[in-house]
Amino acid sequence: MIARKTCVALIALTSVNLAFAETPGSIVSGYAVEAARTTPGFGPSAKRGFGFFTKEWGVSQKMPNCTVCHGKNLKVDGKHVITGKRIDPLAPAANPERFTSSAKVEKWFKRNCKEVAGRECTAAEKADFIQFVIQGDQS
Amino acid sequence: MKKWLMAFTLVLGSTMAHADGEKLSVPANQKWKTECGSCHIAYPPQLLTAGNWQNLMAELDKHFDANAILDANDNKEILDFLQRYAGHGARYSASSLRITDTPWFTREHRKVPFDTWSDPAVKSRSNCTACHINAERGDWSESGIKMPGGKRAEESEGRPGSGSNRRSEEYDRD
Image (tube, rainbow over all chains, first blue to last red):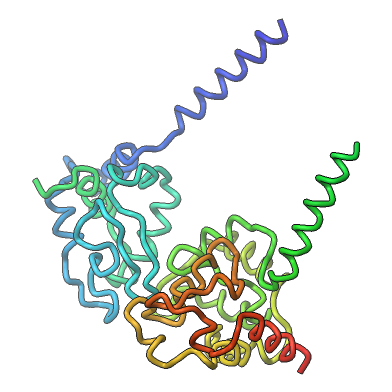
């Protein structure tokens, strides 16, 4: 009886975890919903995301664009342009841990957008960018 | 019983031997390791003073040409950790807040040839693992040093391994 109760409790806990598990797709959806509030009918676009990723912002001298650290091939390691430290691939296909924590995603957007774009990124830009990284092409 | 005692003695012995050569080891703090170890390795707290760490953590939005801002709770937890194990004295202090500008760092690395620093494989003085190949695992021992091009630290210094350890101990007593 006790064993059965424990089992039920375990299953309940597991499903709670599953319900809250974040995926790149769920994080894109979150940003897309936010973007649709200001832009009705907004849908994430990998093509716009590619444009964002490769844009020459020219705000920071050492970090003028995303690719100076992350490289142009999303499936291979990047390299920090200042310290030389290896950066795990951005593509979830090559690095399953990517975009599985919205808190971590927000932290890095906050830092890198200020650094490279000179301002915070919009929800639309974030949705487009992650969509691009998931799809891995510019279509 | 005898076996257990022997195993215990072995474990104790190896821990002590390890601790002896591990001046820079600290208890694991996951937040420090993750947050400070994203763009560079998480530098040991002992290498700057508590005052230096405080100033450094107060300006993470302009952290040596990069934005490394943390939320307030994480910042506090990490600063507490850094200060708890911080170095003491002028040799671990630099007005630039760069570990590489402290008298300790300068002295420890004084025999590293100039062209080693500018080697593309090193790129920056902040890139410890270019030579201290196991530093990310907390191993800063002399035997874990491998200079670019496969040179060993001893070769560039022209002295066998224990030399540098002895020097640093002497220096610590200065």
